[in-house]
Length: 408
Image (cartoon, helix red, strand yellow):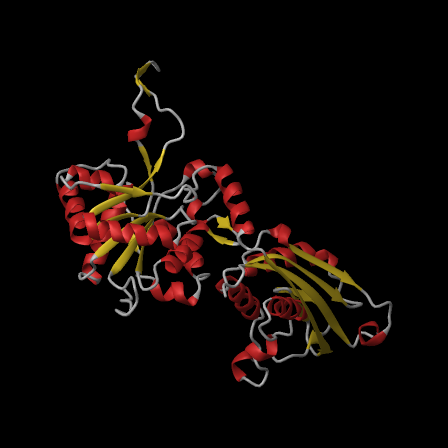
């Protein structure tokens, strides 16, 4: 685990992020915490929000062992600050309660001096600094605390036949959220005792603390701190992410490579057979290079040569997917998302059309984008210029990104 600097405001705070469930109600072929939100996995968005809200805190993810590859792919997209805050993930259990206990045990083994622990759902990406600060303050003051939101609807308690048996007073009810916050020793002891007693089905950590006899304080929650559960929640969350990224940028890129000996060329990470190759220090993927420069241009961060100098022997023969991923990671490290990329190959041969679908799919994979956010076209130069004379291939590209506004 990475112990954070004691000079940071949340240095003695850890956040257990529960992300071991299957999220079946959200639909999709993978667990909801790995489905995309704003161009990156939901879990990555949640972690980034927590790191921004609690600088210096240690993040302890709890994930299913079967999801290891999905987890690795998700955290690869984190910003450097978030990566530095991450602990080794704990393996989740069969229930949420068991998963949290595993996270607390990992925390006790690695950072036993932790004072305050927050326990947060991996599917709540809109947590902010105000809520986290209130959670930490409440845990210090009360030992166990939960954010709660007043209910807008009247609640009816029914029996097995569907008949109303009670109408609880709405003013005394709260909808519990996360992060739920605790003095670390209190909640670690409560989870340990509950597991030893065979109590397995408590649905949140406040219930575990209550079972152990600890009074739990409710502090004001945040109505905007939504949990993504149903497919419609993803649509609502996506709209919020886009609204939070009002700075729309467009960048352009252009690249050219001369023909040389070889039996193939690379277009967007796809090997295309040809009677010649392209000369270049890397793999000479002219389309990938143009898109890389378009992304770097959109965030005003130099060009491909400034990030990967051709004089550096490390990049001799390198696959250009390295360059593309680097540019995409820089966008996401700024808290942004890639809205669209559009590339055009200019050549007489080889024909791009038969490979277009494969090229789009490969670019979408490299950039972690939906396929409908990637366009690939091709044209000739009507036998004019170096491309028309079949001396080489050119490509141009544009990229649209959305960024948060800088605070001044």
